[in-house]
Image (tube, rainbow, N blue to C red; front, side, top):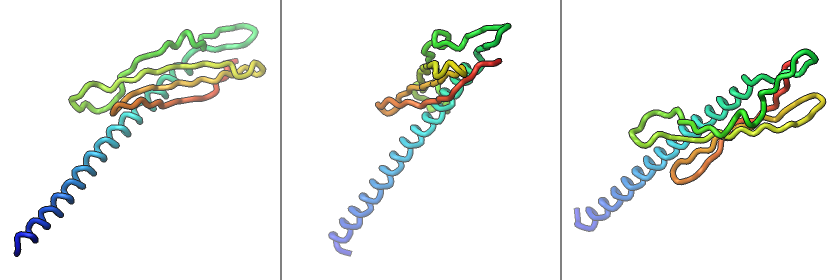
Length: 134
């Protein structure tokens, strides 16, 4: 073998190894984002379930309304992700409650879970309508 063939084969091997390392790094970043996004969506759903537990009754005998935005202030949460030894993943849930119709009474409940990873901010949302108990 000549020296040129050896140098070229080392160059090809180096480029191949560099590509594999870059692929591994990209895959690790995507896994991190996916895990945090799934945990943020679970947090948004959990925030929505809190609003479902609030009493909102409309009938002639009993009138109770705990489904108001003041009862659901912004809530910092720790995302349920595996411990990687780095800082814990945190987020904030914001709950918005909007009167959609009055007849029939219907409210739009939206919970936004805002979180950050890799220097960017993301939002996962849960939105649904809620009617009172009769």
